[in-house]
Length: 346
Image (tube, rainbow, N blue to C red):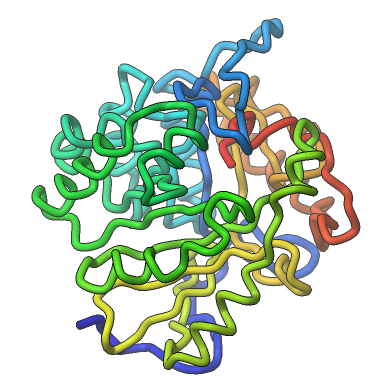
């Protein structure tokens, strides 16, 4: 049975760390850093890298090293950040992934260390991730049909990923989050099978609306599906909205007394989606992104070379926050400069 403490039918945020330094001009406070450590991915998902990964070839495009990562996380932690999500690409492709996890986990003030993975290495490595200090895992599983999974991802790895999720529970994770990008023609009618899957499993299944990026206008027009119909179905069938913590992501999470699992909905096209933004992004090459969409990013790497530069680093981040827009404007058809989600960590 799920824990119904803190559950209500009205969304409200809990109190957070007092007086964080990172605040924008709309009084939004930032407790959550999404840190990319590589833009390389070994899957070829139709909505992200349908032709597979291709290096950018840009000068000075090497990925952040461990010392630089340690400095950026320390600066964010000193300014109120409590959660770091290690992203990619596929972050576990980094040979030093476990060392990076350990470094983040050992940073004072960081209470949640998460990663988002395609799961292909989970079965063999998830125990090592937990030992290193990884507290939360998100796995991408866009279909429970192995054939469709292969078609969407370009890889015949469905059973490997399912084994990895089972293994995560075996090594002690109390919950695994599973990300499902809503694709009208692939999984748009798969809610019953997903609900059946999580009935007796502590999985938070998160339906994510397909977002339009610079390289997939046609796919977006063909496959975009709103999460509103799913939300309406859940509410009509006794699901209750769960109260968010200050460093939670943007998902609206629903729970039900008859289900061990939970359902999350991420609907970036819904009015007011950006009002509760609490997260910033740093790319694998050291650029601060105030939003997943819309701008080139602010260079931070020159201020990641010495511990003594933290004051200047914090000042640059706060200065950028003073220019952060009120919205991503996706609902107006503006996709910004993001070519695909792997480029800055999704």
